Length: 339
Image (cartoon, rainbow, N blue to C red; front, side, top):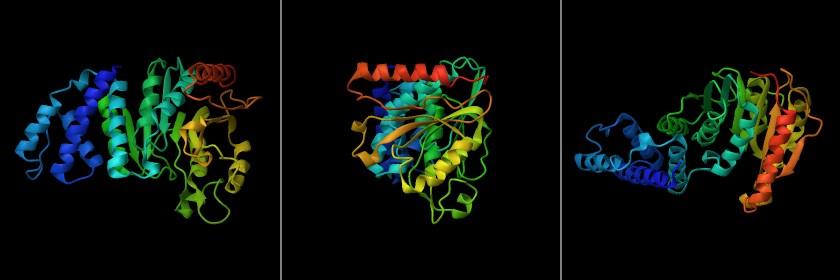
């Protein structure tokens, strides 16, 4: 991966997106999807005379400035991430639609590579794929350690987010199948060996769907992240692992009673690791990495649940030592006979 290549590709993506945004009178995100399609198709698409010849010439010159097809997936992903960071400002994207920060995506990916290394086949799912940053970051890391085929799937009910995820994965040349659906309805993807998700926080509005889940609220709307954890475990293969980004206070709210009642008989709580508090504006916004495992295939509840808080990213030696301890704990406690 090259920082210079990332910056060069971002410059082309950003300038072409801004040019199309003005020419088509559209949002920055929609203009990015359009410029991604242009790159993938090898030509500027024109519909009803838009964009005009002058803009087509500008875009053609821009696209010729970078040989993106020679770049590795990580270089492309990071360039797309920079585009998304700008889109957050330009389009004022709501919090639940923002991408998973790179550092967190990398940590989640690193944790699962130790569990899946050498597998002959792996089915990977992101239940709340959004722009695809977490899924493609994890997939790129897994491709380095999984011996056989990885089937990767992403689910989201926002068609714009899915279009971005498709553009991003296509530009990275990563085979991902994306499904447009409500992740709390019957899923249109196969059972998965590994599920990752940056769970949205808030209330789920469709009470009829929530009624199918044990983690639903006794009264009123249910927390969507509670329901999604139950759905994820349902979707895992025996012994399968789920790694989720959740609120640090997940089990300490009044609404967590249903989740705590459901958990012991349906999944093994193997770890809850708070991310550094410095990453968040206040204690209430702090997130954690939750590790759940589905019973079966030799999986068992670990004697000592991995609990803790990552040291500051600024203290690299302490941070690396903590990650090494987690990896050692994983390899001693979570390996199963899944193949």
